[in-house]
Length: 68
Image 1 (cartoon, rainbow, N blue to C red):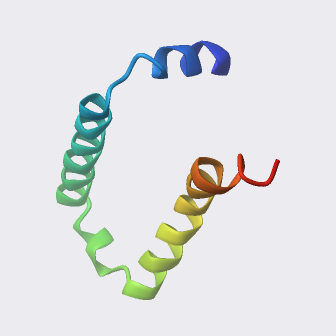
Image 2: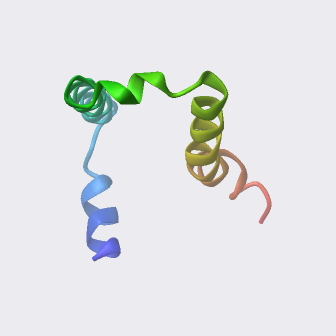
């Protein structure tokens, strides 16, 4: 299944990826509107979450091919 998704992703353009990001942003706004208690999360926790979730894709995109 992952292989099939990777093949489908190769057909996406930069604009398509930008639209996916925009839709994810809008989805996050909807979730926060439904659960306003999520707005009370402290900034250090949010920064840790961003770093934790962004480290893998950042490494795979920019550094993994250079190490080989």
